[in-house]
Image (tube, rainbow, N blue to C red; front, side, top):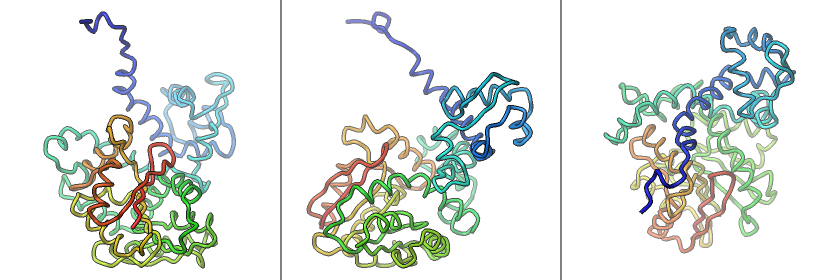
Length: 345
């Protein structure tokens, strides 16, 4: 039998992942200081960036050139003679002034999640959340919904992380048999908005708690969709879901434990007609649980953030929806690690 020493092995993957937080925190700091928003206007020298961001001279070029090496910035020249600008993806997704901005989720990662993940070991040993609740704070949703500023930030963050998937779903799913859609826990209304924009015959509704209604209505007004997307208020645990041909949930089920997941699935079943579709857009874990690393890591994030939440595989989804009475299922890959798990009544 060959020993590890006899097999050609390379420590680079171990080192890359083990020190991955170096690059993570460098990118998150750049987003938080709005570097990419500043550089979206024009290319700048290091000294100009230093002045605008209030940076010290000591590690200025290490910081900027690390972002170049990781592919987030482009550069002409070197050090004092250099001019920096955004790489294409950073310019599109990390400039706060563009509607394609996804930095909200990265701001939340920087300001909240990054320090909480330092306590992952405690979470693994206790099964308890490691966020604000650990020190007597309110649970995340209670705290966020109680503060209008935090709520607006949270809605923006959730929109950013899912926008590409909502657009892909709106184009890839076959809506020809359906006339109405309701997005449960719809936050800013973006899933319903993209379905409405890409499928003119669908009348859409987005349902969330009353505190979110003004934000969602403002978004629909800005997108010119106030006649195509109805914004309605309700608590998805206590109120019935609006009757619809399609019921969607984007990153909702993974917040809850199995019993609560089943409550929501059964409510979706009851709101649908025969042949209606229940669609869950999440980081669905592969059935062998060895490929979708992001889905598995997101499930660990649910340990950090929630009392019982977890991400799930497609076979887990099938078991739950069949128990609720759905007759058939399918999986529609979207972008990156995200898929739409579909159940038909």
